Amino acid sequence: MSAPSRLARRMWHQLEPIHAALYFSPQAFGAAAALGYDVESRWPSYFAYRTAPFGRAGTRLATALYYSFSPVTIAAHVPGVWEVATPEQVLRARLEAVDETYRHLLGDRLAGPDVAEAAELARRAAESVPVAGRPFAAANLDQLWPDAPHLVLWQAATVLREHRGDGHLAALAAADLDGCESLVSFAAIDAAPVENFAGRGWSEREWAEALERLAARGLVDAAGKATERGRALRDQVERMTDDLAFEPWRRLGEERAGRLAQLASPFLGAVFEAGLLPMTSTLGIATVQVAD
Image 1 (cartoon, rainbow, N blue to C red):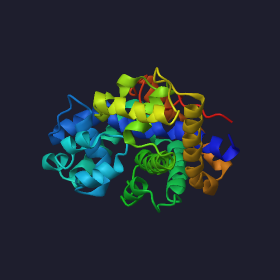
Image 2 (cartoon, rainbow, N blue to C red):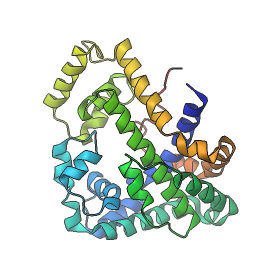
Image 3 (cartoon, rainbow, N blue to C red):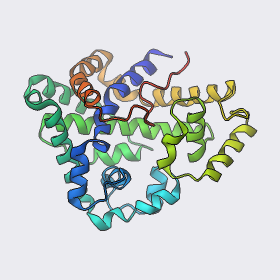
Image 4 (cartoon, one colour):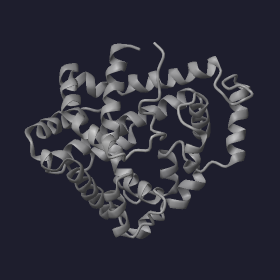
């Protein structure tokens, strides 16, 4: 792995959990419930929170954005989420949820100078991302910046992780992996258990057909495990994802990126110590290893 790729991956591991707390914290579910969303499942609030920067997105736009979700699953939530609350209401609620989450996790530490410095560095990196072909990054970058430094840090982390995610979808498409195949090939390298992908909504038949297509390409064996060729292709996807995510860190510089990682570590630690993220999620944090 090249030095730029290592830096991009390191910053992803540092910032992804800071952003992802929105989809798992009790405060975020509480805010969603207050808007009227069903929180027995995390998906109604997930689609509302993550899609709101696009306004009243319809099914086709959401299908284009959510590459690895079954179109049937997407249609079950979008545009229905806007019948519960408007995108503007959801955007306010998600910031309030993030505020409550991190005040609960870090308390008075949010008022310290380290948080303000982290917010400044993260915002500088976020505002430097190229947005061509990066819809999630662009939509989040179009949002007004909040005032509180910890919320600036969260919003910047959101822009940066969505910028990386946009690039990841481009890498999957370049590898000729469709939405279902992207998950099947990920499970095939044992990055996450197959059952973890049930929420993406693909049927058993669709999963089996994707396995057959991958097998025909020599990417999985008869047991559904990745072949050497399949692992090489996933390595290619991850390497391209890292390369496409490097630009904001190139502009910020390795020294300042390292400083941001140091300053943001209490947020990362608090998220993990609170157990907010599933131990075996589909995020890929600390699971995907890319060959040199």
